[in-house]
Amino acid sequence: MLRAAIDLLVPPLCWACRSPARAGLCDQCHLRLEWIEPRARLQRSSELDEHWSPLAFDGPARSLVHALKFHSATALAGLMAKQIVDALPPRAFPPGGALVPVPAHPGRRRSRGFDHAELLARELSPRVMLPLASALARRRASVASQRGLGRSERLAGHSLDLQLFHEPPKHVVLVDDVCTTGATLEECARVLRNGGSRMILAVTYSRVK
Image (cartoon, rainbow, N blue to C red; front, side, top):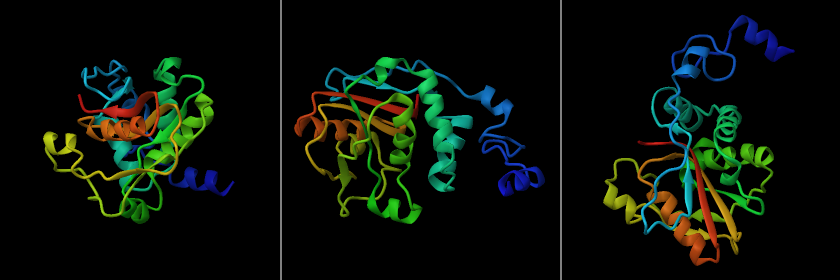
């Protein structure tokens, strides 16, 4: 009741254009979302078996990602998960698999109060009927961010120092918000495969084209 009354007096705003909106984006910005071929092309040497991503990391999609990560708009994770499920084919979430979020750096998680990829995976879990398995973690000594690093540094795992919590699931669906170069997903997949995972897919909300 109180939330509804507040929304009547001060309507929620679109995260992209700041006009009144009901669910993160106004109708016009929903139409501006850039949907792309969801199955990404992988290099032959990729540790991933497949990578799915429905949206280009641009415009309103970028605004939603930034709102979730940098403005604690955690309610957006539900909208983003719904958009993923609506756009991707069922084989992106194979029966018997488990959702493994790409882990945030401990410092980032502590400052934000949540892990955005884990939140996205939690919203996906009941929608795709797959369990959540937080099998990966970053060591505290690793660099906090890959922002500003070149492709070669990212692909070398320059800022990642991953460890397994326990034996990982045999069939994994990695979950993250954005794929930039694919280096983070590749490193996660490498660690999981070395730990015993046999099939490794990845699902990201958006990717840099």
